[in-house]
Structure formats: structure tokens, C-alpha cells
Image (cartoon, rainbow, N blue to C red; front, side, top):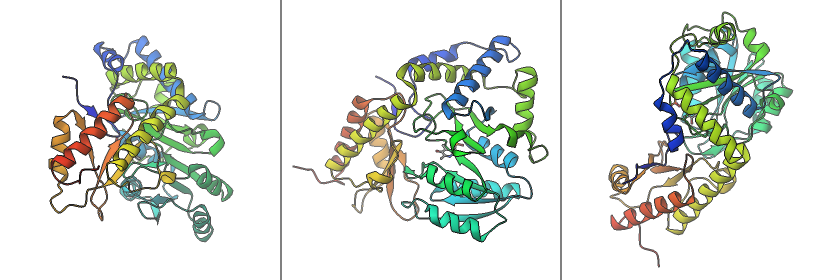
Length: 369
Ligand SMILES: *Cc1c(COP(=O)(O)O)cnc(C)c1O
């Protein structure tokens, strides 16, 4: 029996080499562990294209901790954040601003509609108090890809700073923080890098980070303090997630061996196309048109049957070795299937077969001829 395949956007299925990298205990004072931290941060910075302009600050915790740290440090206490919202993670960034007491406003579009660059330009023109724009690159609640380059150009032209939650796109989709003029880009160990959960990181504009003294409301989330301590001592400020970092080092080695970002994108795109084609051929309908879809996670409408229940469907597919993800839309019944992780077309085909045969057996999807 093999382990279940996680068709979720992280935690996701990791390779054996990544898992075995966690069999060593590391002392947090050990110079070899400090070297591991430095090498991981260097690689992450290079993937982001920020070696000359930015720094990589790792942070203990899940991805949201790092988003909160980025907003806390880079949006000054008298700043104002305009959050572009078309899903749950955009709402979460706005909620973070609320918790931190940062003035903010929202530009909301529908779950299946990316924000419009011209509308962003108009909103920035109309509200000079806005200092920062917050954007979710791939909104994982549906899988929609937001137009980062176009929106970044609008923010730059209006003289506003940009904070990008690239949690579910980083390392798969191309991103160049220097060219885009990003203040802070946030991602984590356990998505397209195919590491295990436990750390996030912020790729921060060096000058902006150094100027952020006094902004953070939080001791443990103070990115500048973390950066400063790492610079001075080579160590994390508080207990580091040693095994997570070792696993991420192994995952990065595999990433480079695979061919880096273009190769990872190609594998995910092939996985995603195979998944979408197979489920559509079986009679399921995707939420998004292919033109708006990132090759990360796909949202499908639930079968139009009065007895449909995600929990029953989930359990039956789980018994065949595949873990699905519930939908995250309030208005429509949907479910999600991820195509990222240490998986290939073989696993995707098996998963599509398990999904369709289960729905037919339950009588919720008509058999196709
Ligand atoms: C996964 C994810 C996060 C962070 O979620 P955590 O559960 O805190 O790791 C934030 N934003 C996006 C777009 C994500 O996909």
C-alpha cells in the first residue's frame, strides 16, 4: 500500500529524498545548520530574482505568519493598504490589516474575475492616502491567476508599493521581484517548492526593510529583528524549524536537478491539463475558463445531484488513496483538486479515474458512453 497522494495545495505529496532529509537532528547553534539556513535563503532569493535588491527573511510558522509579518513591517503604522480581493486569501490579508490596526480598503471582484488594471489605476488616483497595494498572485481558493505584471506596473506608475502573496505560485510561475518593483513577496516551504510545512519567508526590498524600524506591532513577527539577528549571528532569533529547513534544502536540490522554475511549471501544467481534460471528459465542469486558470489547483462544480455530499465523496476517494480538497466558495457547491507536489501524470490519471468512478458508483454522475 502506498501512502495517500495529496491533491491539495500544501501540505502536499513530498518525495522520499525530502522526507529522509528529516532524519538528522540539528543543533540550532551548529555552524553547519547556520550554513544550511544561509544556503536556503540564497536559493530562495535567486528564484525570486532579488539578489541585488532584496533579502530573504525566513520565519517560523505557516504561510499566514509570514504574510502578517510582511504587512506589519512594510506598511508603516500611518500607511494605508489597498487589498485586491477575489477569494479567501485576499480577505485574509485584509483581516490581517484590520488586526494590525492598519488603515485599509478593498477592491473586490468576483471569485472568477481578476482585478482590472485600469480600475486599480482609478482607485489609486482617487485615494492618495493609499501607500501600498496587496495582491494574491494565485488565489488558491479557486486557482485563479491574477495579472501580477500588469497590476505591478499600475502600482509603480502611481508611486505605490506592492506586497504580493505568492504562496501558491512561487517557484512554479516566473516572478522577478526586482523587475516588478515588489516591496515584499511572501511564500512558504510547503507549496510549489515541495518541502514540508513549518516555515514561511519574505523576499523583502532591502532598503524598505531596513527603513521599517518600529513598524512591527509584534515581537515574534518582527522581520527586521529576525533579519538583523541572522545577519549578525547566522542564527534564527528563536528556535528554528530545523527538520523543515533540512527538508527544504533537499527539496531545493531536487528543484534545481529537475530544471528549476521552467521545468516545474511544465510538469504542473501537464498535470493540470491532464486533470482538467479527464474530469471534463467525464462530465464535470471547471469553475474557471482555461485562460484564467493557474496550473496549481482546479475548482470543479459539484455534480448537479440533490444527494451530493462532499464528505461521502471525499471518504470514498480517500479509500482509493487520493486526498481531495473541499471547495471554498460560499455561493456555489464546488470541490478542488491540486496538481502540484511530487506527482506526475500517472498519479493524476489514477486520481481522475478514482474521482469519476466514485461519482458514477454513487449515482451522482451519469455514466458516459
Ligand atoms: C497556502 C496559502 C497561504 C498560507 O496559508 P497557511 O495555511 O498559513 O500556510 C496564504 N496565501 C495563499 C494564496 C495560500 O495559497
